[in-house]
Image (tube, rainbow, N blue to C red; front, side, top):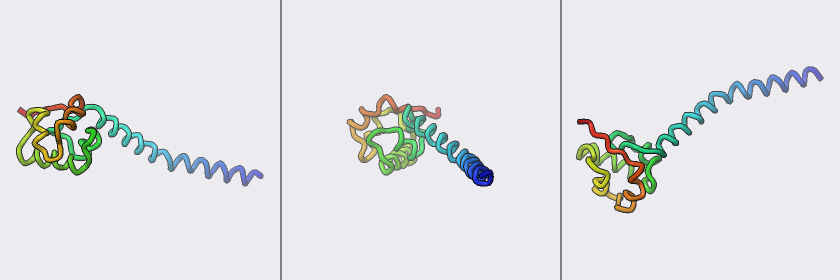
Length: 105
Protein backbone atom coordinates (compact mmCIF):
# COMPACT_ATOMS: atom_id res chain seq x y z
CA UNK A 1 0.00 0.00 0.00
CA UNK A 2 2.87 2.37 0.83
CA UNK A 3 4.43 1.68 -2.57
CA UNK A 4 1.23 2.56 -4.41
CA UNK A 5 0.83 5.74 -2.38
CA UNK A 6 4.45 6.73 -3.04
CA UNK A 7 4.06 6.06 -6.76
CA UNK A 8 0.90 8.15 -6.93
CA UNK A 9 2.58 11.02 -5.07
CA UNK A 10 5.60 10.81 -7.37
CA UNK A 11 3.45 10.85 -10.51
CA UNK A 12 1.29 13.75 -9.31
CA UNK A 13 4.28 15.83 -8.21
CA UNK A 14 6.06 15.28 -11.53
CA UNK A 15 2.92 16.40 -13.39
CA UNK A 16 2.98 19.71 -11.52
CA UNK A 17 6.69 20.13 -12.22
CA UNK A 18 6.18 19.68 -15.96
CA UNK A 19 3.03 21.81 -16.18
CA UNK A 20 4.55 24.96 -14.61
CA UNK A 21 6.43 26.04 -17.79
CA UNK A 22 3.28 25.42 -19.85
CA UNK A 23 1.20 27.62 -17.56
CA UNK A 24 3.81 30.40 -17.74
CA UNK A 25 3.81 30.19 -21.54
CA UNK A 26 0.00 30.34 -21.67
CA UNK A 27 0.00 33.36 -19.33
CA UNK A 28 2.46 35.12 -21.64
CA UNK A 29 0.29 34.39 -24.68
CA UNK A 30 -2.82 35.65 -22.88
CA UNK A 31 -0.99 38.86 -21.93
CA UNK A 32 0.04 39.39 -25.55
CA UNK A 33 -3.52 38.85 -26.73
CA UNK A 34 -4.93 41.26 -24.16
CA UNK A 35 -2.36 43.88 -25.11
CA UNK A 36 -3.24 43.42 -28.76
CA UNK A 37 -6.94 43.83 -27.96
CA UNK A 38 -6.42 47.32 -26.51
CA UNK A 39 -4.84 50.00 -28.69
CA UNK A 40 -2.26 49.36 -31.38
CA UNK A 41 0.18 51.68 -33.14
CA UNK A 42 -0.24 50.95 -36.83
CA UNK A 43 3.15 52.54 -37.54
CA UNK A 44 5.11 50.03 -35.48
CA UNK A 45 2.97 46.92 -34.94
CA UNK A 46 3.80 43.72 -36.76
CA UNK A 47 1.23 41.84 -38.82
CA UNK A 48 0.39 39.38 -36.05
CA UNK A 49 -0.37 42.16 -33.58
CA UNK A 50 -2.49 44.01 -36.12
CA UNK A 51 -4.46 40.87 -36.95
CA UNK A 52 -5.14 40.22 -33.26
CA UNK A 53 -6.01 43.80 -32.39
CA UNK A 54 -8.19 44.95 -35.27
CA UNK A 55 -11.68 43.62 -36.00
CA UNK A 56 -12.18 42.49 -39.55
CA UNK A 57 -8.43 42.40 -40.21
CA UNK A 58 -6.97 38.95 -40.66
CA UNK A 59 -3.36 38.04 -41.26
CA UNK A 60 -3.50 38.78 -44.98
CA UNK A 61 -4.85 42.32 -44.55
CA UNK A 62 -2.47 42.90 -41.64
CA UNK A 63 0.45 41.94 -43.89
CA UNK A 64 -0.91 44.36 -46.50
CA UNK A 65 -0.95 47.14 -43.88
CA UNK A 66 2.69 46.44 -42.99
CA UNK A 67 3.69 46.27 -46.68
CA UNK A 68 1.92 49.57 -47.39
CA UNK A 69 3.68 51.19 -44.43
CA UNK A 70 7.07 49.90 -45.63
CA UNK A 71 6.46 51.05 -49.19
CA UNK A 72 4.90 54.47 -48.57
CA UNK A 73 6.06 55.38 -45.07
CA UNK A 74 4.22 55.91 -41.82
CA UNK A 75 0.51 56.56 -41.65
CA UNK A 76 -0.27 60.17 -40.75
CA UNK A 77 -3.95 59.53 -39.96
CA UNK A 78 -6.26 56.61 -39.34
CA UNK A 79 -8.15 57.42 -42.54
CA UNK A 80 -5.02 56.64 -44.61
CA UNK A 81 -5.69 52.97 -43.88
CA UNK A 82 -8.31 53.18 -46.63
CA UNK A 83 -5.40 53.29 -49.09
CA UNK A 84 -4.64 49.67 -48.18
CA UNK A 85 -6.45 47.19 -50.41
CA UNK A 86 -9.29 45.50 -48.54
CA UNK A 87 -9.52 48.11 -45.77
CA UNK A 88 -12.67 50.16 -46.16
CA UNK A 89 -14.48 52.87 -44.22
CA UNK A 90 -16.50 50.33 -42.21
CA UNK A 91 -13.36 48.56 -40.98
CA UNK A 92 -11.76 51.89 -40.09
CA UNK A 93 -14.87 53.05 -38.23
CA UNK A 94 -15.11 49.78 -36.30
CA UNK A 95 -11.48 50.07 -35.17
CA UNK A 96 -10.96 53.83 -34.84
CA UNK A 97 -10.77 53.69 -31.02
CA UNK A 98 -8.20 50.90 -31.12
CA UNK A 99 -5.77 52.58 -33.52
CA UNK A 100 -2.88 54.78 -32.44
CA UNK A 101 -0.77 56.88 -34.76
CA UNK A 102 2.73 57.36 -33.38
CA UNK A 103 5.16 59.03 -35.74
CA UNK A 104 8.93 59.11 -35.49
CA UNK A 105 9.63 62.79 -35.96
